[in-house]
Image (cartoon, rainbow, N blue to C red; front, top):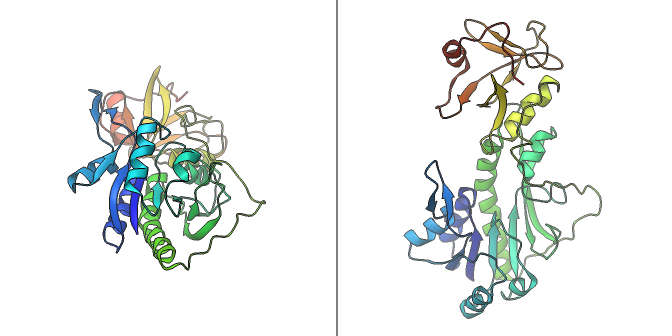
Length: 308
């Protein structure tokens, strides 16, 4: 089949690699426009756009996928199907109707659970034991289309959102290509999503990533893991924001009030609503990440210090 791929972040690259290695013809890629990045706010290409350009594949970067110029170019290319992975914009009906077989989306949840922009993050935040991926027919509604296939992935107590997404991106790429193969053979069958079990996964904001020390230790750990690596969990220390890596609940630790800090020789503890947690990495504003014990030694944590 002639394919146009739609995607933006590095999470979509395993799917691109899998399609590139398949028998299908990748004729173009659609991605979000260049965006400012880094401390210098330099404009950079998305990982998907950069991948395609390196291979001489045409790249389309409409500000909105309803632009007449983009729609006409898609008609001119005349793809059989548009596989989409983490594109980052809603696709209008006019664009959905152009490919002969429509658009099929690799989404990182077992639908209808966690429809939306941040399914893995919400799965970890809410304590799910499993994450997953679904390939479904894209519709105008938010992740509502019939599903061609799914897979599941266990979430361990130490997994961050980045860890789980990395695994799902690789396994999901194989699932996506298998669905494309079945579509080419005329054997693909999509099943409508059940009406029960629907949950929403809106984008995780910086406010969501602020650690609530008044929550139980397990909830503190989940919030930090769910927001790692992006947008990054954070808290306030001496009036300045510091970012935190994953923490470990300490069942036999000393009694500490929520947010209270205790710097020991080999570990740094923080109080929660239940047991304390042991800090992993700490990143002060403008600094590189460092082990919590080194950070505490450098700022000279005292008995009066606490996280807000």
